[in-house]
Every structure is written in structure tokens, then in C-alpha cells.
Length: 616
Image (cartoon, rainbow, N blue to C red; front, side, top):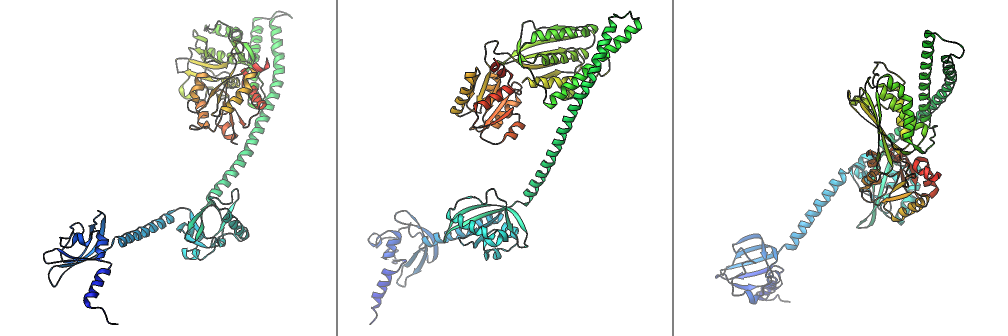
């Protein structure tokens, strides 16, 4: 077969060439525009032949090799390699190759390589070991942390099966668990609730935590395992566990010592009080001179014996009271009592002591004030505060007793004096037991330092709070709160329900309302503490899981506010975190679902006003 004539061959090459071929005559006009030029640039031969070439398509007409950006007829940018050569007959021959796709592929390849390098960089920067395995367990990818953790090089790990990193005794079970994971793949921690171990190159087993995630790959699914060495954490946990065990043992020893101390004090108090009562009784009989007259010296001796015996009996009673309180064996007989009447009886008892120092005692309380309290213990509170006020007030001074209603459920009593005052540094420890921060106006220390400690405990047992306002040389004002008898005034006790679930609120209200206990509701944590401060309820129920602000924060806010710091707060939650709640100031922890009897018993035990209502 003979080859085609040159003219035919040239025409065939011109028409089939994948690159744009364009010829310009000596005048710079197009005299040839092949099909590829039409395909690449978008102009037809009829639109270009005999005309100057489109400047946007061919911006350079200087002989040479050029890489430039062209613009098609449709306005799209186009990256081309352009060769411009002179023609023997005059004019130019232009050959343009479309490099847009190739350049995009090159850039994509460069970006892919850069991304892979960045991925490897991030992978190796991860603090935890990362291993990717296929369905057979063959390791397909590892990071630098995995090399460090297991002691193998990257190449060694990539030639291994993941089962080789499992202790011998666990390998069979691991293979079975791996197969089970593939039947139901999903992101989850491995061996939930189990102690996991991995085997290092040196044969050592290390405790680990493992998280599993299935990932897609070119050959199907693989699983990525993130492995964390928890050796240091396990050591720390073991130390904490050992410390907790030791602490528990010590706590039991302390509780036993406290119990034995309380039992000893109770026994000794009894043994001491019996002869003291006899001494006091006989000195009083002798002072009456029923068996014959006494001379002045004998009377003075009898008076000294009687006075010191009474003082010793008071000290023994203080020690016994505190030991009962600390041992949890002091029960209060909470009922409606007239605080004004009890205060009057107390003032009668200290009248002579105040008169001996020419101290004016002003009682600004006239009307009856019905409160929920233990009559004996309320008098003890008044006695301790008034005795201290007289003791630390110079002769000719003044002691003032006052009261004011606070909110809807409490009354605050105050005992103010014009005495020596208390320094700010001492005010933080003034209520500690056996603590005396100053001498009396006679320049000596008197008593055991238990009076204010007993006052604080007794007030808190009533659901109240003790406060002190004092400055050296300006006197002191001790005040405390006690629940009002709201039933006597026709006002029922109020329980504030802090709960976002309407059904739960309705359930608690249904428990309490028929019993004569009013309920108020705060349906969000935000503003709950402020509402409690304004309402001043007798008790609060608090849910921990609420949208926005958590119940934990509300509990902290309630305990930080003076108005609610002593209000009983009953945490009601599905969470099993009673120890944490109690440590943060919760009065009791009731795990949901809470039965009516459980809630009512808790309220009776901790809220005197509720106990009084239900007792009626």
C-alpha cells in the first residue's frame, strides 16, 4: 500500500492533532485553525480565518515556548503550553497544548502528598499509641507513640498481627473478641469494666485503655485502636485506695476513741454530779442555820463552797452536753414554745450577776414569740450568750436583747453588749470547743470554753445559724435564728421544689400538700438560689440534673447565702453520688424514684416545723 501524498498526510495530521494548531500569514491573519483549536478555545474556523487571532486566547505571538493562562470564548481560564515558530513562507505557526487537567492533577497530587505528610505528622504527634488493623488482625498503620509503647520499630509492627501485642494468656480470648467486634462494629471503649493489658517487646505486661473505631479503607473496613498506657494512673489509684483504706481505719479508730471518750465523760459526769448535788444540798441546809447559828467566818466558808460547787456543776454539765451532741445522742423535744417567756426566765437567773457589776440588761422583746424549739435547749442558748455578755462587759456597761422576723419562717434573736469586743482573727475560732480568745473584765479566764461551741451546735440542730458582729473595744453582738411556729399563726411550712420536670414537681406536691405542707416550685436552676433567699422556705428539694446551670452549683449557692445556709436541702436525683452531695452541704440524699414515706420521714427528721405540723 502506497503512503498518501504529503499534502494528504499533512492535512490528516493537522486535523487529528490533539493540540491546537494555528497558522498566521505574514500579515498576522489566521489562515489555518484546526479542530483541536476549535475544541480548546471555542472559536470555529469560520470565526477566525482571515482575522487576527483572539487576543484573550493567544496573548503572546512572539517566537518561543510559553506557559501561560488563556481565556476561552466562554470566558473560562485555560492553562496552556504555547510554542510559537516562524514559517518559511512568512508568518507564524502556533501549537497550543491544553495543560489545565494535567496541572490540576499535579496540584491534586501535591496536595495529597502534603495532606499525607500532615496526617503522618499529626499521627506521630499524638500522645497515645495508634494502630490500624484489618479484619485478619494484620497491622496496617502505626504511629511513633506505638513504637515507643511496645518497643518495636515501625517496620516490625507493620509485619505483625495485633494478637502478638496481647499477653499470652489473653490471646485466644482477644481473637474471639475481635471477631465479635467485626460482627457489630462501632466506636466504643474496649473491654468496658475490665482491666486490659498489653505485651511489650521485652515481655513486660502494661495496663492500658483502648478505644476502638471502625474506618473505611480501599480494601474495606479497618479498625483503629487508640491505646493509652495507664501505668502511672493505676499506681496513683492504688496509692489513693491504700490511703482511703488507711483513712477509713483511722476514722474508725477516731470514732471509737470519740465513743469511748463520750462514754467516759458521761460516766464521770454522773459520778461527779452525784456528790456535787449532795455538797450543794448540804451547804444550802447549813446556810439556813436550821441546826444552829454560824459565825461570819463559817458563813463565808459555806458561801465559797456552795458557789464553787455550783460553778463546777455547770462546767460538768457543759462537758456532758457537748459529748452528747458530738456522739449524736442528744435528742431535741421540738414543739411550739414562747421564746419571750423562756428569755424572761433566763434573765431572772442572771439578774444578780448583772447587778453585781452594775450592768444594765435591756430586754426589747415584749410580745409573745412562738417558735419551734426545745424549751430546755433554747434556755441554754440564751443563758450561755447572756452569761458571756455579762462576763466580758465592764462594770457599768449594758447588754441588749432584741429580736426581728426574717422572711416567712425564721426569727433572729440578738444579744449585744458594750464589752471588750473580739478581734477579727479570733472571730473565726470563737465557736471552737475549749477555745477562749480573751480574759474576762477581771483579767482572768473563766469556764471551759465550751459555751459558744454548745450554742452553735444547738442552734444548728434547730435548723438555725449563729452569727457574730464584733470589734475590739466596741462590744459584741451574737445573733441566732430559730424557726417560727408557722402553724400557730396559720401559716403552713413551705417546701421549695427545685425541679425542671413538671411531673416530678406535681408528684412531690401531691405527697406534701395533703399533709398541710405548702409547696413552691422553681423550674430552672437559674435564679433558684435567689428565689430561695426571697422565699426562705422551711426545706428545699433539689434535682441535680437540670438544663443550663447544674444542681451542684445551686447547692453551692444555697450554702453560700446566709439566708439559706442552714435551710435543710434534700437532694433528689437518679445519680448515685450521695457522698459528694453530703460533702457539699446537702442535708440528705434521696435517690429517685423517691417514695412518699421516704421523703416524709426525711422531712420529719430534719425539719422541726414539718415535724410539728405532722405531730398535730
